[in-house]
Length: 139
Ligand SMILES: [Cu+2]
Image 1 (cartoon, rainbow, N blue to C red):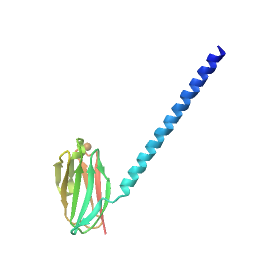
Image 2: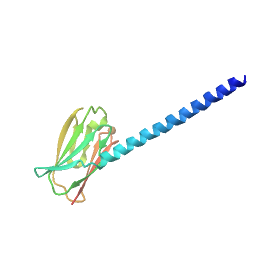
Image 3: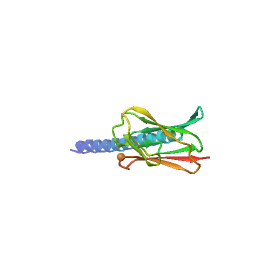
């Protein structure tokens, strides 16, 4: 009788301990993911090739990076990259450019942007207005 009680107690304590352990493990994994995302955002998605500014944006479940700082007074091409994008971020609208297109599920779609003045901002949206992407032009 007494041995049974002790055995049950030990089992309960072990289950509790493993539960706490797995919770902590999950927290660690979550933390690592956010750290990775931060590193991704720091990496520049703007480059200049043959006098043209190239901005690369991933479209899938939103647009990433969501905000891009680009150079003003430069011909610019936005390379919108879809990769198995079956959500509404493939239905892209850029009102400032009179642009509206259903992007192919997996492709890189080039969007020409005429030189913008410093301080100008171009905003793209999914057709539902749920996801947005902003490009800020600065000197
Ligand atoms: Cu949407």
